[in-house]
Image (cartoon, rainbow, N blue to C red):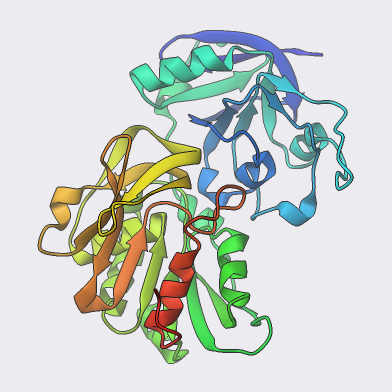
Length: 356
């Protein structure tokens, strides 16, 4: 295999072997702790502009199953300790290395992912480059930034997903980089879903006369999306709203709150979230590098959930605006489905059976 290097912005260099596509690649290096679900991770549009590093050492053992994809692969690179060349699973269609090659995603294996993870946890998320030769000039690594990610991840034209079985509600979904399972969680509950591009105006949303509005997950810095925030200001309070991940952050900005970049983010399927009303703790799937500042929401919303590890904001209720949002992924594909009941809460807001 061809020798490759992972060069970090702090000067650290890790030597390994090339996987995936040829060529160099720049990105923001982030780690995810999931022990499974690498296909859902790679096809989660929220990773746009980032180099994904898996902390679990063996990746690719069950191959590629296209039915499990969550969206387009927008990652800039892939880092693993060991890549399985011969997957063993009755659903497998082809090896993961081919997936990376077909989509032009450079990667590297054979590096000490534990050491790199500890470095990021200590120093914070940083830029990196996957390359065949160690570059003398590393100015491009320092200068890299994830920009325009939501526009790149969003659909370009509206589309409609029919309800499974009898149609109960019509939901408009603003696609900031939506995972497919958000749509599936709605359609299987009898919702027809109209998927809309991220730059859809408030007037166009309301013209559809939906029963509710879904704000999807997505990549990048929430404060970069000023136009989306401006439209949400016109929508909050006009119809029931449920926001997930980036949708949670954009709703908070529209309500007057603030967001902040976390040191190394929350990525993986084992993030503990405590619900303040009941005191119960749920293990959740997450993928975000930014968070809503809880103190900025005082007087604007009610804090409903916090991260049990670092106390950061994980959920907000807006009783006067008929809106609630969460930072984690209740659709959680792949990951725990313990909080999928939040979709039932959304249906109750639209006039369905009262949520317990």
